[in-house]
Image (cartoon, rainbow, N blue to C red; front, side, top):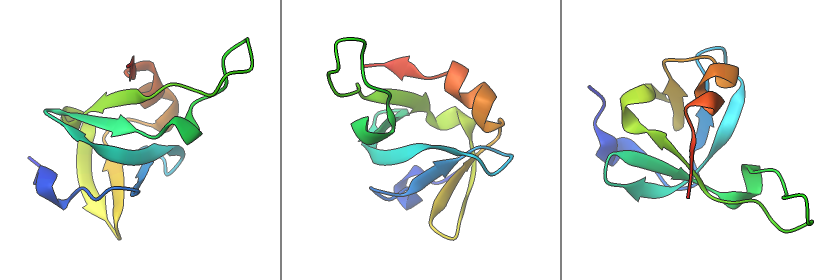
Length: 82
């Protein structure tokens, strides 16, 4: 189990394959809230929405980056919208 207190705001979140998944906004309970900047714009041109990833997907913290146990494309499927 990863020590959640080691996850820093603005840390990059990467999949097990090294692909960029998002950037940490902050921790909310047992979920990592990702910044809106990594979320695609909506069809009406509005900014993206916050997404969440379960801390249960975190495999470790490496060089200030949050590495997930799933590849980036799979981890995105587990994201929850705010």
